[in-house]
Length: 150
Image (tube, rainbow, N blue to C red; front, top):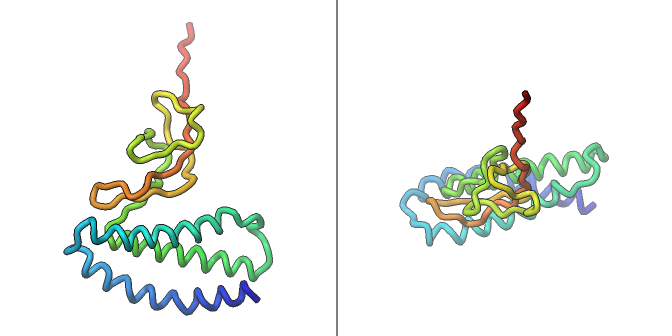
């Protein structure tokens, strides 16, 4: 019953959020970083709750009710990401890029060597107007060694 209630709540909220996206984008351009940071941080917290739920779901092929709930959560997460983007917050979620200490917190620091690249995003980071709201938590891969044969 809790799953059904959550599904119904999400279904009711999605259209309202979609309508709000246009209004948000209209006012964003005139706002400075200090004004934007609080609503962006609130959306990031909501994004994290949904994202963590999706990442920890143990049975991707579970019952239909769970599948529907996961689908709704994914759609809701996408709307939150779009809302963040309309406020000017960009995700830090790229893999196969060099590790940048200003943008990345490395979880497996034992693997951190010169030339290391981001191999996995553990938690998405966000940047707005050139300022880091939150660093991405990442795992890194050491660069491939080049061997020269004779």
